[in-house]
Image 1 (spheres, one colour):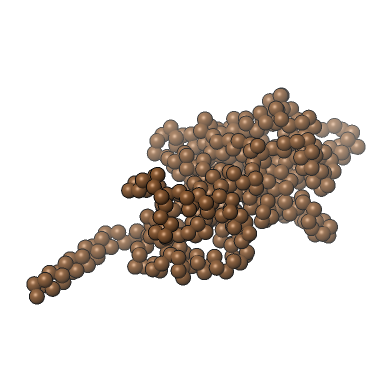
Image 2 (cartoon, rainbow, N blue to C red):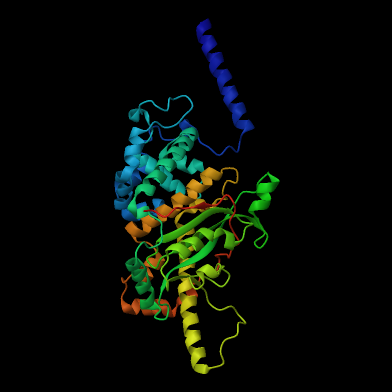
Length: 410
């Protein structure tokens, strides 16, 4: 009798403790095991999605179709997930992974990190989709994000770099000239992108990330796109107080050392053109108020050239829209206190964008400049080009000593 009474009292005490904890933290944004499905590997929302093997569902939630999702698994992600212990303080790093004890298999882990990358959702939404408790979500995300970056770094589809041969420059230029006959030698477009940053407590970092032109805290980046929609250059993670000319120095150096004469990138009027050593290798439309020749024939030639420059420059804005739209996580202010995490996140998004473009083909630049559409559709597209302007992309001032340059892949 006494033992039974003791059990009742103990259970009652535990109920009171849980009730008090719930009252103290009524707005905690996480779920516990009783509110989740009992087994992450059975009947979860993720399992239903994965078993459907539907391209539209995969692209909507993760950005990749079924074949590309499997390619990521086969290119090293699954092997790394199965062969490497998940880092945690109470487990030896050199131990053998216990695959049977993990809440997710390799495909589930890849699905988790891609859901996270493709949206700005809170973690409790991931908990519902994958039936995981908060600590497991955080641990699996950190681990899966790292091995996914290692995977796309090693994939040729994730490569980032300027054309390697004269033939590749000629191929890119030919795609552009087909639409814009006067832009002989153009092989890509370039622009800057500011991503929101958290406001730092440290005054020095707060000052470094504050951009007075936009009255906010940013990390600035520079991306260059080929007419195939591929990101061919990326300078990432630069505090917003620094000027474009500083951020773009690695791109200027590549243009100076490796780009053949006669080939150039197209930029907007605000983008720096570099020093005399790369004169003519970045071209932009004329600024308002600039003087041109009084000869009517020459005026017409200049204005045709300027209209084509302006039209092609739009591809950089399409590229920025693709980059931000594909990875919803970039809409969340970047963690100002995690420099390494920011670099990895941004590089992962850049390389994953190239995998998506090369394998899935969902890319506005690629769809316009690669010879896919019927001529009537192309003509209608270019007639309505001005209505397709992405006016929310902001011009930026960028770089810092903390910047990350994605090294060109061999």
